[in-house]
Length: 250
Length: 254
Image (cartoon, rainbow over all chains, first blue to last red; front, side, top):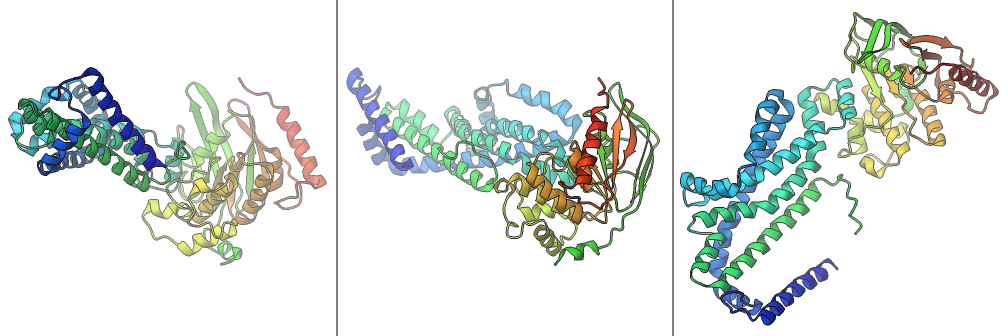
């Protein structure tokens, strides 16, 4: 049933796209139709896959470092009052700086290779992970901690066996957000300055008026981003089976 | 492993006494210079109006409230909170652990060896054989509180502190668990905070009423036969009536 629904949604969107092309009569260098984009995709698919693999690597590494750093920071914040007092304002203030504005600086410092894009994705992922995991860590059921204290548990044991597991559903929410925004970080980095990746390919195609190829790259990116999101969602559900899900019977 | 095996385990109970206990919440003085004696191997039930400080007194002995005045504590250790087992109104089962793993929580937290055989035996003795691998979400409220009881017994401490342990259960489940607890905790020194006069009348060796501000304790008589007592017997019903009258006569502070 889920598959049928997915196919129906995709088919409806493609049809809507084609109808808009027919009604507006837009030239193909402004809005190419789905067939034209499909042809461009087929012609260029080896290059598209090559660039997609680079963007995927950037997203994957960004997710890895962003989640790792985010988790460590959240644990430090949860356990150290000075860290909360001194780092929390810095963290919040850092979010006031648009990531897009940092991208040129990162490219300047880290170069045109994947390092600047990984840094970009890491930066954009970091905050949602810290915020959600920290929130989970601070909202541990106090009675669990009381019970653990009567069992002579050390603060480290309480962290490891109670607070961290209890915060995993919150962390999972943060990772889902991270999975959704990670491609933005990677692609913005590629727009600003790169020699490979889907974002670079889109800029390149745009510059040469290959709008059909630009759309093909965009769709490829969308498919990969959605796949990453749902893969992570399945993995997270599998890892946190005790998490209550009020919508699971839909 | 049968029930009797556990009773022969060590952890001999002893008298527990608390002198000079004082506790404030903000400007309110809950109790001051309070003395509480718990007799070895006996179950003491503590009743009184809400907010009088019953749970706070229990938490003080559990080491969960800071001592604000010089308090003399004689018990399994010289400071409160050591060598006790604690059971609360909520089952406090960790949702990501199975029933068996929850029973073994103490050894998991202390990083010590886990006596799985004893834990399995305890789960059997609380009537949960066959549910060892089940997570708490799949258990009923009564079953969850049985797991919590097994976890409390697993700690095998001479002093057991229970804070309204069965108050969230329906009447029949509560009665069954009272029987079970009275049976399994027979040789322990137990303090039970409860709002349910019938519970006190059924399982207590001694009943204390806490009242006033700052609060004081006084003992009221219990039915002569040993617990757990038949809830339908004349003596128990009379005792419940007397206790209800005692409690209803207390002027509730604030």
